[in-house]
Length: 317
Image (cartoon, rainbow, N blue to C red; front, side):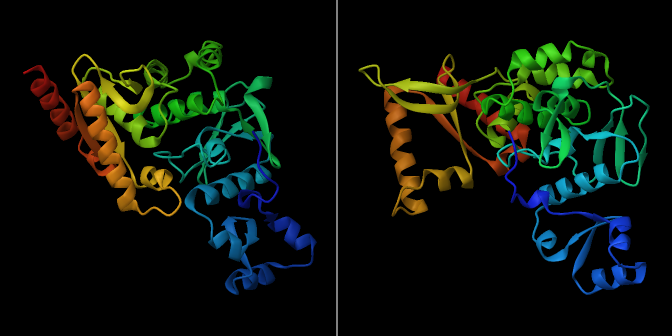
């Protein structure tokens, strides 16, 4: 795992002392900021204004984290959610707090929280640190465990399932590292739950949230990516979630999903009609009931759970 040299998150950062050494004075720095030539990534750290203005929240956080690491008066590693912000874009930052920066000290001393930075002191071993661009960050295994101590179960579950699905970590690696002192960190009750629920078959943030909804609403846990076979034994479909014993399955519909399904020359309407035919085929083969859910549905987990339980009851009847 690495970043391309032209990744926008690796844009050059100049500290105040470097600008002063190059001929600026404080008044000149202020003029450059007001004129739109420079932007203040954080106090005492500056970047080119135009490319910085075009960054999304994740990328801005990554730049700010690099600035904080450059300004640190002791050796640090970018960690927790700040490390995730520097990972490939396919690793989601959904639900992570990107307002505060997280650094872990290498000297083992107690950290502090000031100026929007939380310093941590957890003991680092060699495999805990990787190099991304020009900074050291905690590895996917370490960063995942760190995030579970500062984020809700749902957020940790989404991240863990993604890292497993993309094979950036294995459950064996995570469990082994967790048992090597991290299990004695504060707030690891959340970690225990995340490791119990995480599933590498989960392919998206929406599916991860749906899995958490089933757990939180005390529903039977579904089988992700369930394969449907035709009469000849061929796999003809994969279902996002299924409860074979109840004869119910769920498809999670998101805008991105339909964009990914678009074939050359097709419209979204064509995809919707094709998905409708697919659903009818699956229902003919299985006799099961389908529940289609959207991102908006996840905002009301009680209603979704009631809908699923009603489908269970109708199938049983």
